[in-house]
Amino acid sequence: MSEKALHKPLVFSGVQPTGDLHLGNYLGAIKNWVPMQAEKPCIFCVVDLHAMTAEFDPRALPGKTREVAAGYIASGINPDTSIIFAQSRVSAHAELAWVLNCVARIGWLNRMTQFKDKAGKNREAASVGLYVYPVLMAADILAYKATHVPVGEDQKQHLELARDIAQKFNNDFDAPDFFPQPEPLILGPTPRVMSLRDGKAKMSKSDPSAASRITLMDSADEIADKIRRAKTDPDNLPESRDGLANRPEAENLLSIFAALTDVSLDQAIAQFAGKQFSAFKGALAEAAVAKLSPIRDTMVRLMGDPAELDRILAKGAARADAIAAPILAEVKKITGLS
Ligand code: TYM
Image 1 (tube, helix red, strand yellow):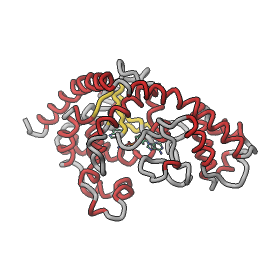
Image 2 (cartoon, protein in one colour):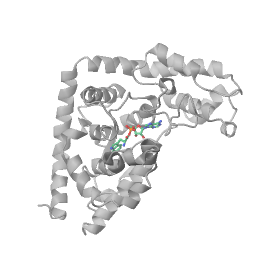
Image 3 (cartoon, protein in one colour):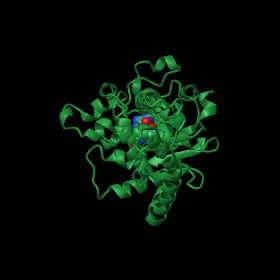
Image 4 (tube, helix red, strand yellow):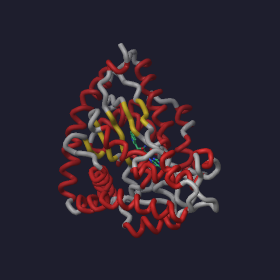
């Protein structure tokens, strides 16, 4: 039987509640989730267990978790249809992660480039959690037998690992087709939003420069200011895609414009061909404010009622648990744990 017929389509994705949600999270992931809700059942997780893998503030974590949930809802995720919940509230994630830790190979994890980037030079001092983080991510997905995983490009390698782990589990325990091969969905003109200060570096929560990223909580003035100060090059904007070669800042800003205004990169290039950056930046700031300000306003409103967000997260956790618990029970049977 084909993979498609065997496993019901199910979307799963998540964001860590560390730092502020930024334009990379929004354009690379969350924005692409919204239309999927009309096509398939969707589960969107706030991955608080992942947030523990690097330095974090336990007092700030509950608020950050609510903030990410608010960001999902403000961006257009409907908590009545899609499941929104915090990872730590569904024990299947941690339990399955242990089983999968015993399936994944050290050699596979040693190849993970994000661990190398995040651990930096002092790799010996990184937490074991940071090292096995991609296995927890595989558990997140496989605990629901999710088939589609919309993410930014930086998660591609982790998704490939999840597929390898799923396959090895199925082979090792003679459980053909038990876990699906989850498919990464890397969509839109901005699978990799770059820093506003350096077109060769990824926009990230951990960049020490706040000017490098636009966050979903930035005011209209802050957004416009960051775009005004964004790094550019001395030339005017190109006439065609070829003209973007070796112009990472121009490519990044035009791609962001395309994603924000729902046009293709080629259409964005055509719109600003031969124009100066200053004129383009004005249009880009306007587009960013138009798209992000309503999201910010809704986030602020939702965060004003933490009890309501907790209610949404609790309801989501119960719905998620109802899907994951029977799958975990099967895993326990297959592996001799019950
Ligand atoms: P995280 O929290 O780093 O990022 C959340 C999502 O945002 C995307 N993203 C970007 N996309 C484009 N450009 C950027 N500069 C950029 N920065 C971040 C990420 O690709 C991601 O889709 N391990 C994951 C969270 C996770 C997860 C999962 C995702 C845990 N379990 C299961 C999918 C399925 C992470 O740390 O993402």
